[in-house]
Amino acid sequence: MAFKLFKRKVKKACVVGLDGVPHSLLRAMMENGVMPNTRRITAGGVLRSMTVTLPEISSVSWSTFMTGRNPGEHGIFGFTDLKAQSYDLRFPMFLDLQCETIWDLLGRSGLRSIVVNQPSTYPAREIPGVLVSGFVAIDIDKAIYPRRYLASLARARYRVDIDTDKCRDDPDRLFVGLGFLLDCRRAIIDELWGKEDWNLMEIVITGTDRLHHFAWDAWEDPSHEHHESFVNYYRLVDDFVGWIHEKYARESDENSFFMLSDHGFCGTKHELYVNSILEAHGFLSFDGSGDRELGAISDKSRAFALDPARVYIHLKDRYPKGRVARSDVTAIKNDLTALFESIEHDDTPVVRRVFDGEHEYSGPYKAQGPDLMLIPRNGYDLKGRVGAPGIVGERRLQGMHTWDDAFFFSARADLLSESEPLTIVDTPWKIVRSLGIET
Image (cartoon, rainbow, N blue to C red; front, side):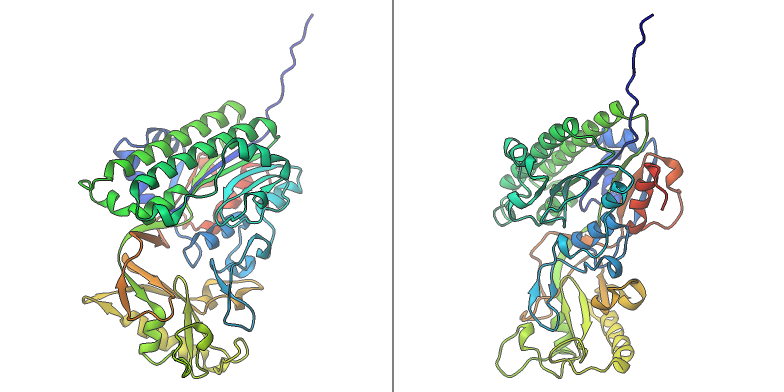
């Protein structure tokens, strides 16, 4: 008698990240027929809106997602930060992450991950599996682990990002570039899918974020000349989601398919300069050189801001020219909170909420974070620019991130309640649990 041997299917999970896609926009795209694959997939699980960690930017949110920890534990508070005991900016990188990733955690149980285009993972370092770095990766040679896949990236004509300087004001170039990025993501995943044994496949699409920054007006105005191009890009994204879901379903008996965004999005009308507000109200001043830059801050300053709207008390034991005693911090925070809550433009309050870092963060790196974080009302883009000519300026981006209206989807309904409060720090643990790892 002949026996047929069957290969046991390995426990697998698949995650698709859609950078900056609001829960509200995703539902609209599904309901109006633009994203039929996504609608079909999400109908079989639980789709929830969620908030993200602060500040509401990709470097912080994706660092939270890849670790399951808040910024006070993983140590990433922005795309830029200050060098210790200095006013010089530095750019935190993957090596600055202060705790392990979920890929490391899975690796200790013998599970392997393939991670493609994950923001804030440059330069690529060893993980139990394969890592292709995402934004901001400046050298493709340092954006892949293991390096034997460099040739695969070349064959796929892989690019990390569009040329944002050229695409910002050139919609035709923008849409062509976004389509190309989807194609090269698909090519590299197709190759890695069959070459590597894996338990977690994670792919992040960042083109949605670029689209919203540069062409949000085209979404909000159906008569806009590029409205159909905007919608057509979402059709391409939906096709990508359907393709990867079908590949996953063919290989796994599990139903561990997930989707998420790292923040929401809204349209902008104006920029508001936080440092200009601080200067106008006597919290920030500069020395007599005439320079308006952070290095020229006066020792009389009590606070300053970094992008996007992170406010720092000018402490004497933290900054070279700082003179604020720790005993005065609470009073200054209270004064600043009252100030920001009172700011109006065209008789409209600008700041929706003021968060205190003392309460929002926990962990060994909590003290490195901002003292206050400002969440604007939709339509306003808060900036930490130093030396702006006024408090309010014309927008430079059509859309900007929101702290809420992000989304998370789990095909496993048992992993996600329909009603529990949900924030991005919770989501990776649901994915880890789907692979049989309890934490």
